[in-house]
Length: 138
Image (cartoon, rainbow, N blue to C red):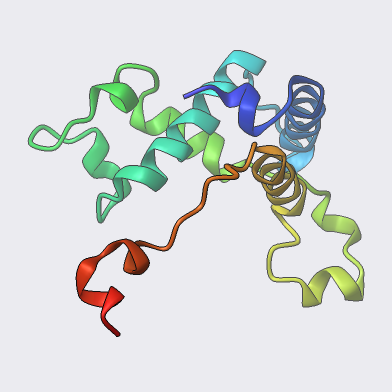
């Protein structure tokens, strides 16, 4: 999966820097991380969204271990980074932002939506029902 297709590199770098800045401000303690680790965290979240195990810790447990997740980050490190994951400054929220249920992840949602809209659309569209002989008689 190519993260550059979903999140362009300039936008990704901006979000990574914002994440690192906000993570260091939270609880006045620094979270030592790198942009590579933030990319791994994003990839793990994407993979978890696709696989849908019922509990997060199952990706690291013995019976349901997922090498694509467990080999790249430990469970405790994943939880630590996830707890410090912020894309907006929560100390300065406006009334408009409070109404938007996705305001905490809005920058990422906007980037993903823009990437999906930029995908090429096929001009050869068909309705399967018209191709099926059963529906032609109707």
